[in-house]
Amino acid sequence: MRVLLAALVICSASSARADFSDLYANALDVPLNKAPKAGRSSVVLIPVQVDFGTFQPVDIERLRAFFETTDEMSFRRYFEIASGNRYHPSVTVAPLVEYAGCPASLHGSGCSLVRGNPAALAQDMDFVRDVFRRAHEEGKVDFGRFDVNGAGGAPDGVVDGAMIVINVPDSGVAIPIQYVNSGSNLAGGTGGALVLDGVKIPYVAIGGAGVKGDLEYPVLRQFGALLGLADLSYDHPSGGDRWPAWQGLHFSMMGDWDQTDHIALPDAESRRALGWQLHEVVSGTQTLTLLPAGAGGISVKLGMISQSRREYFLAEVRGPAAGVDTGIVDSRGAPTWGLALYHVDWSKGPKGGTGEWPGRMLFCLDCDPYHPFVQNLESDGAFALVTHGGVADDAVLFEGGAISSIPGAQPLTESNRYLATNWYDGSESGIAIRDVRVNADHSVTATFTAPAVADPCSDVVCGSMEQCADSGALAGNCVAVEVSIPDAGVLTPPVTTSSGCSSTGGAGVLAMLIAGLGLTAVKKR
Image 1 (cartoon, helix red, strand yellow):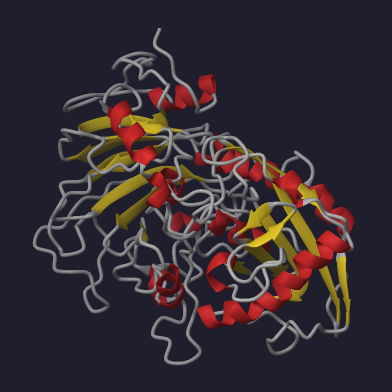
Image 2 (image 1 turned 60 degrees about the horizontal axis):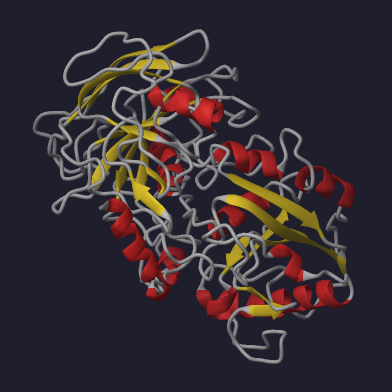
C-alpha cells in the first residue's frame, strides 16, 4: 500500500513547487527548486578574480586540490560523509573569469555583492549572468556536461549544481535565479532560469573569500542551500540587536560554524530531513550505543509530530571523526565527544509552498533563541549560548548525567530560562535521557525514554521514488520503493541493558546497516 501511495504522489509531483533551502518541507520539487541530494552529480565551479584593492588573487591549484579530488578533506568527501555515502558530487573547476578592476555588475559598496533581501538578489543577477556568459563564451564551458543526475538518477534538463567563488570577502549567498532573474536568460529569452547548452541553471551558490582569504570553505554553506538545507545561523541586525552573542544553531554547517577548515557536519535535523542519516524511533525505553555522526552513527528520534504539536527531539553523537567536526573541543581546547540533543519545532520551520524563501531570508528560522526552529539543549543548563556565546563544546554535549522534563514549567522566555525536555509551551514531554556514558571508542551509550509510537511513519514525508518503512529495523526512515524492508529483529546485535518495550546494543541495528550496506538497499535474508 505504501508503494502504491508513493507512486500516486510521484504522478502528481509535477504540480508540486516550493523553493530551495526549505529543508525538504516539499520533497518533490527537484530539479527546478533544489539540486539532487543523492546519487552521482556533476557540478561546475566557476572561479572569479576581481583585481581590485587588496583582494587576494585566486589560487586555482588550491581550488582544484579541494574540489576536484577525493582526498580527505575534499568537497566530495565531505558531502559523502555528511550524506552517509548517499551523495557523490564530482566538481569541475572551470577556467578563471577575471575582471580588471571592479565590474559595474557588482552593485554593493566596496566592490561586493548585494545581500539581505530579494531585491538585492535581483541586483546580483547582472553579475551572475555575466559570469556564466563569460565562462561559456571565453572559457568554453559546456554546461550540458553538468546534467547527469536528477530526482530519478538520470539527466533531467537541469544542471546538477553550479557554484561561483569570488575573491571578494563576505560574498556568500545562494541565489534562486529562476525567481529573481528578470533579464536575459542567455538563450534569447527573458526571465527565469539561465539556459546554456540546452540545460537550465535555476540556482547558483556563491562563496566569497574566508577569514584567511581561502575560497573553498565559505561556499559549502551556500551549496548546502541548493540541496535544500535551511540556514540556521543568525544574521545580526545592524541596530537594536537584543542578543549580540547569539549565533544560531550549534554543531551545524548551516548554523554557527565559522566557515574555516574545521568543517562541521550539518545538524541531525538537516540530515534527517534529507534522508542523509538513518534514525531510530524510540517507543518506550531503549538503551542504545551510538557512534559519532562522522563515523556513520545514527540519530535517535524522541517524540512524533501530531495534529496538535509539531515538536520532537533528536539525539546523536558529535565529535571529531573522519576529518569532520574537528573544531569540537572542550574548555581546554582538546577534542571532545558527547551526545548532542536537538529540540525541533516545525511550527517554526520552513514552509513547503512556492514563494516562501523571501520570508526565510527576512525572518530567519533561528532568530528567536527562546523558540527557534532547531535548538541544542546544553549539558550545563546555563543557556550560555544565549547569554555570552563562545562556550566550549563540552558545555553543550552530554558526556554524562541525565535530562528530563521539569514539572510545572512555564513557556521558555528570556525571563524564564531553563533547559529540559519540556515542550515549548512548558508542558512535560515524557522524554528523558539518563545514564549517558562516553566510551573509549568515542561512542556514547545512553538510555532513552519517549512516549509509545503506534506508527513511526505518521509524520514522515518521503521524496520521489521513496517509501517510509513502517516496521522493522528501518521503521520511520525513507527508503527506495524497490527496497525490501527487513523484518524486525533481522541483523539485531547482542542485547545490552534494556527496559520497556525494546532494546538494542553495540553500534545498533541501523549502524550495522550503514557499515554493511552503504545506506542504500536493504534486503531480506
